[in-house]
Amino acid sequence: MSRMLLKVPLELRAKHSLEERENFHGHVWRITVAVTGPLEDGRIASLPALQAELDQYIAPLQDTVLNSHPQLDDQTRATPTCECLALYLEKQFAKSLRKSEWEKLRLTEIEVAVDELDGEQTGSAVLVF
Image (tube, rainbow, N blue to C red; front, side, top):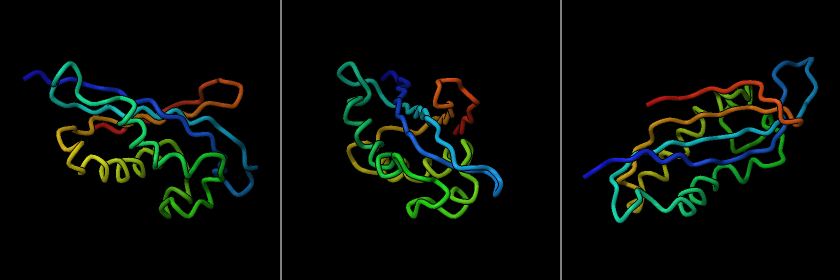
């Protein structure tokens, strides 16, 4: 049975500050989750269903200040960077992939890219498994 890689795009619009002297400012965080799984009936998973499953962890963060969001862990609130968001999301997404409907999927990577509000990409971090 062939295994395929599926990339799931998600988007988060939120503010953060990385230093006490830095003003809070907004970004568009582009999150790409890659999973692998066996190819069955022409796909490894329903992309809309998987997006909805993963978006449940992103939706509560929309239009908030990440430094003070109670859903985030202490490290991510203290340093809301691409790297910390990727590590936080790994823990959250792993919960979903343990569900029976997703158990055939394996998390392969999480990329978190940060864009300025004018569309200019600042950079990204990729967590690889």
